[in-house]
Amino acid sequence: MEDWIKRFIRGEDRGQATLIPARLEDYVGEDNPVRVIDAFIDELDLSAPDFSGVVPEATGRPGYHPAALLKIYLYGYLNRIRSSRRLERETQHNIELMWLTGRLMSDFKTIADFRRDNGPAIRAASTHFIVLCRQFNLFTGITEKIEGLRRQMKSLKEMERQVEAAPDKQVALSDPDAGSMATSGKGTGTGTVGYNVQIAVDAEHHLIVAHEVTNVGSDRARLTFIGK
Image (cartoon, rainbow, N blue to C red; front, side):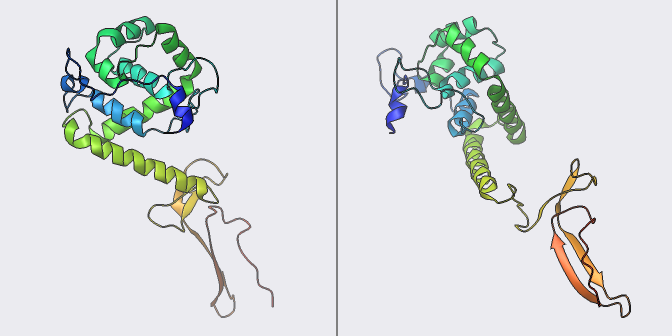
């Protein structure tokens, strides 16, 4: 474990046996939707949407990892719990939230500050979550689909790395040599992934004397003139 990870307040082990209740794990069924939230955020790269506090300060009182607070927020979003004070109360008695956070019970101000300081990142993560839920219909037959969600998240991470490593910051899945071309004629707007083939023909003999394949949608300034 990285040393900086130890700087965060850590939740209890869900498999830790206690007298009452026996285990948190025993109270959350395999098809409980809360497991979808858990799987999604565990696979989410929180540094990508720029959540604050992903790497803790070297000194001072340990804080909560953004993943734990995002789990609380997403749970509240799905269950129509908007109030930070009510979310604080839910973490103290709601067994699903206890399972989700490992019994972390953050105060309402911490939850409110997290929402205030990470608004755009929270919205981006929430949108991503809803899109995946709709795509995989995750709230039915959850037991079979959570692993599929984890694989999809890993695949998206790998694709993001490939895009960042590509010279032009784009990757075509069907054809590695294809690229996105603007088709509006202004360099922006609608586009397509493919090629633009330029051909030079001998006017007298009607023979192809030169050709070029580009990823630029416009024909302007693409032709090569061959003089005699």
